[in-house]
Length: 320
Image 1: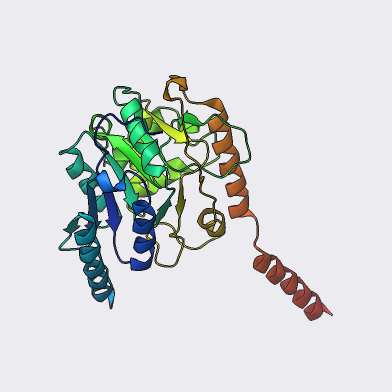
Image 2: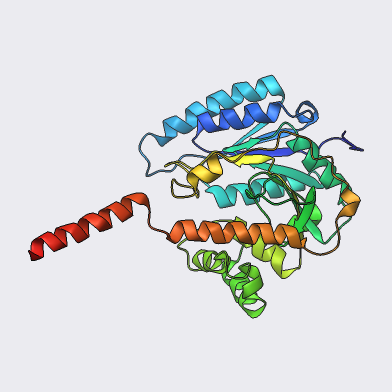
């Protein structure tokens, strides 16, 4: 049962050029009990100049969004130019947090549970004054462990999340400065004991070969000792592992993420049971998944193994 003492948090939905996925995202969102009372803002990024046909794709999406927004009392923000995902999310989140003390953020490829908004709003309410907790995540990695209903981790997740103005004000965009400071702090902890290459990702942002916001947010949080609250079972699923994904393209892990089960039950968490430090069982589950994922990434695929065997056969034939 919801224990909200005020109106639900405003919701920011970020869209670009994937109308089909956006329709699934918004359809799932409307099935949440709190949706009808929530102020929904759809941020539509502009098309890129060097992509043939993209302006038409974006305009078709906007045409549909305008009608959807009119039917659901939502507000649409249309960028005149292509801002890119990082700038869109950072600026849109910041803009809404100038109007309210908290915000829920969803990208156009995130499918949510009917209980997603309940969990997010209750957590935002419960931890409003807990300055060490800087984010609420609706997503958690797949696992087979028995975990408490909720737990804390030092890293934020960005597939359906929420934050407060008091926390987001510490977001830093200077990847090079963040990289220097993390290197001077604890890189092993930042990388979850070597199970995920977060430092490398931050480094690629610093040298300009990558342009993402999530690892900058993680570094900003990490350097201040911030924590994120998670559900034991994911309330969201990422549908965006396709050729047109900005940062999530097709690959070895795509089937794992895109088919991940969403918890169909309400969390019913006891918000007072969360301690003041990272929850060890949640950290162990995350590291275990990261190491399994790392193994999947480095292990040769079936096609690669067949190709290698064929090459060996051809080499042996040539030698005869």
